[in-house]
Image (cartoon, rainbow, N blue to C red; front, side, top):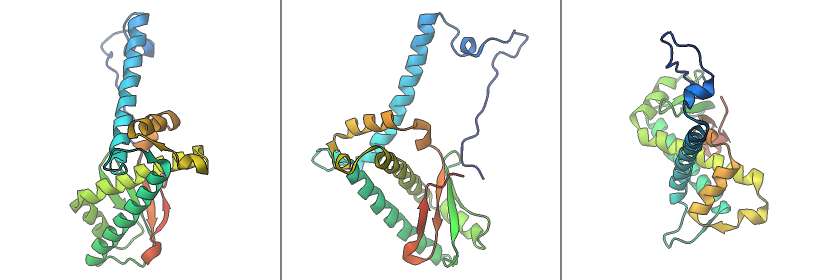
Length: 206
């Protein structure tokens, strides 16, 4: 099952009008006005991405407002992942789910859902657990998104640079400049195993 949002193509000029070049349909203005609208559209997307990154980093930053390091993000994400995994396992065990079976969980941001792979005998119980606990879905998505920030930092920075402190705003700008914005909002998942080794991998591309 794909967790990528399905693209939708709109054809707003279908009534006996000649087909226009895409740039004319999207930007039916003069060259300068068209460029301005493109710039504004890109700026709005950038603002939305930075706003989401700032929200993700809000819990990482200290109360005194001092800077945070990339390593702080990595550590915070690991703590959240561990806490989420403990809560998830307790909840599923309470429902009688067989936690000795390895299974996959997939987050679909478009649907706002987390579902289990079809090969688990208790799939219906697992799916219902997440449907009944939307905060667990939100927390899972947060862990996945923090994982994407962490992966970007690990790929782009040296060990010394990971310890560098920046303000939350500067950090948001850095991530916006160094990652594909759409990837932050794409789906992902994790493989759940047995006991303490529940997380076998994170952010599965499906």
